[in-house]
Image (cartoon, rainbow, N blue to C red; front, side):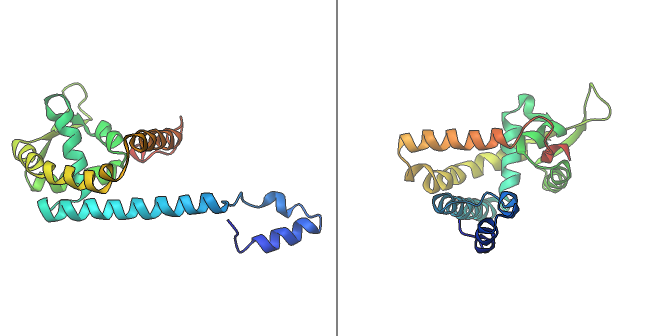
Length: 180
């Protein structure tokens, strides 16, 4: 990508300065187009899914994801720290979401039997009912926004690329949201 600093960097490089070595590795035109396409798609997709869930169930997308993760867990319960990691969110954001969903009767907290300092989030029958009612519309929104637009080969490639990116953002010792 040609940046505003490119002209200065080229001038410095021509003058034999070390400034060019200190310059960022700017995106080339193809990388810039890909990056902008990703940003636009991810922002529009999140807005599309969030609006669908707000309209159909009065909940943001992150709450739906938490309910799904709890529904998959044994006995519909997860330790709060594990739920934050599974959802890729901060413990503070999880605590706020669980508090809100507790008020709606969708989840409850309970102390961990094996660790008195820890808490579990538990999906209630009401929460499971809301999830069952909301899931068909959400799946339709996901399918129409993503999978109906891609070939089977593109779906496989998309999954591979997303896993590579996610794995690369979670190295050992990284400042990950659920550790904050």
